[in-house]
Length: 318
Length: 298
Image 1 (spheres, rainbow over the protein chains, first blue to last red):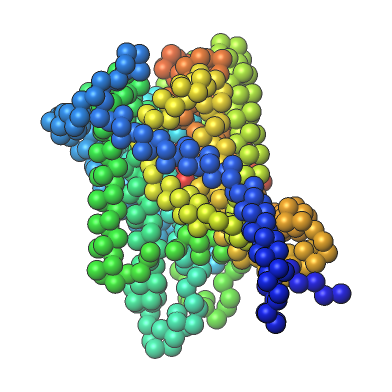
Image 2: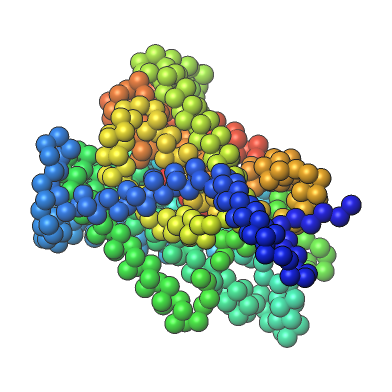
């Protein structure tokens, strides 16, 4: 038995009456298809849009109001944005955020490539190394923050213990305004490098063996193979990873909350932390929304610049 | 799109500890590869803090504060765990987190596979629009959503309830996208055979497609478990009633009130982290696939 489903047959022209019926049938079938289709995707699509597109749009209206959620919202036009541009705390937060990003992104990519190349060797204990390097990725920001507080505790912490054993002076770490952000970079790297490693491992295994062999046949040594074969092959993944890590870095919040809560003397207040502080601790929801839009703009500019720059240097990543 | 290719190679050989084949062997000064000089210290730096966390959780506070600091407890003490469970609502927080994680994972699996299949295979009006709307949301950052979501939750009356912790994790653009990519790669013939056998669209999905989707579903489950279990920002902003804290929020408040009671803090840390670490050790392959595909943490 042959059954044809949903396939219009060509064939001779049908009588007008039959044509009408079939059109009606077609419409009914179409409606059924729509119902089935939206039955599958409807709830999920509604939730995704309702929990992101809708609030993101609403945030813009909130950003033009003065609102503490208790008394009625007051329209203030663009004044929140004007205040933002003139707010020294915002600029301090921008500086801290950019400092973190400028440290975190290049180092995480460098370590990612280095460790991935090492893990790609055929050596013993690779399974152990890989597990050890990936495992911090599953630890939550809350747990990581508490653990970091312990390791970098100035009196009893292991970090200073190691320094003392090496004969070096102990450091105040998270309790020093000049060192706290650097320590947060180290903690973020500890948790996130595993991600870069996995991405680069996958990319390394994607490199066709033939071109490596061809280079070796042409007399390239190991270093030349890495410089002229491996590195260009890794360029697109690097653009992707750099953009991804930058977006993550610009949104740093969890680790700051669980280690320093912005201190000491506000030296680790990032933009998202500032949004949190303004909105949820000071109940200035309108101003907080404006700052979060400011950060959104900053993220877009940085991301677009990176994509533009990679296009200009002829690396196809997107 | 690098990250899609990355997923395809998720079945990277997980046991590469094969000795070098003789033809590559050069004259060696060392009985082992020099790469160990790089990897061994790095592996220790990454793993030792977690080992120390576990070891410290079994010390008494007196032992932790002794000088010079100790790494291995002289005897196993459970005071940290007793303190953590006794002085806080920790059991409650743990149950809350399990509820949040279970609802998030369950809902993710159902909604994302349904929607992923719909967008991959079914023809209906509004399909392109719906799909692009979903993909577009990937660009919207969380911090932009913090304030309006809080306001929305407070209007819906779910602020201060457990729902505030799991509603943001009911489904995700990432999950729908992941499942759609997976279904697109499946051969159509099996589904057509099912249709010929008289199965409805849902029947084809349930009986033919879903059983084939186990690897993608496992990746999705790991992703959702990781994110919902470790989530801090939603329960932190939306829940202030201690009874409804998740373990992560509970830990951060506990941290604020007991700065120096390290045994209790470390015990809490172990309780909050161990389920995922054990899961990681059991299902490394799936975790690695998830990390490759997402990097979405927190």
